[in-house]
Length: 259
Image (cartoon, rainbow, N blue to C red):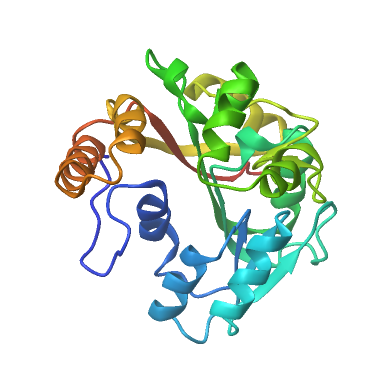
């Protein structure tokens, strides 16, 4: 990752670390769309306790957990979050961290985020990048090889948990991907810029992180219980994230100025 992280950044060279650098020192209201368990918002709250911090997610269990852990945050569970329940130009900054690739109607989502973003605000988008090792994305295992994925999942979880998460998810998801989408998409810079432009947004900069972590992740799953190997693979992944910018695609965008 080319962007340097400050000492108070708890996330390092990751998508959350990139976003933290871009929004942590702003003062206005912030929205984290697809906040999951709100770890990112909680980190922002430690930097600016008085700042309004809003999180929205389609995963009801994740929001319930986040509310218990971080009662000071404004968290909303919305299986159908559009339109957002906020006035035009409510937020000074918005983060969309590895969410767009899970969404079926990407333009509708970006249009709504643009509506709620202030004219001088920033939108931070992170997605998986399309590159030579994209085929190793474990997020698509459930779609490419559903039987193998089911067997692997049942090694650590119950049949009921599998059914709820992947078959009859009450939030309209297959795992963490929209059932309508049913694919964990990867993006090039050009493709992401085109989607943003269609929603009236323009790219300020691109960045990214990692290259070999796509290959490291399967090994980490297999060797997770071997402490020495787990720590070694974690160090390799951290070094990979700092050195390269190919696996993950990070983008800062803003509203297009009036013609």
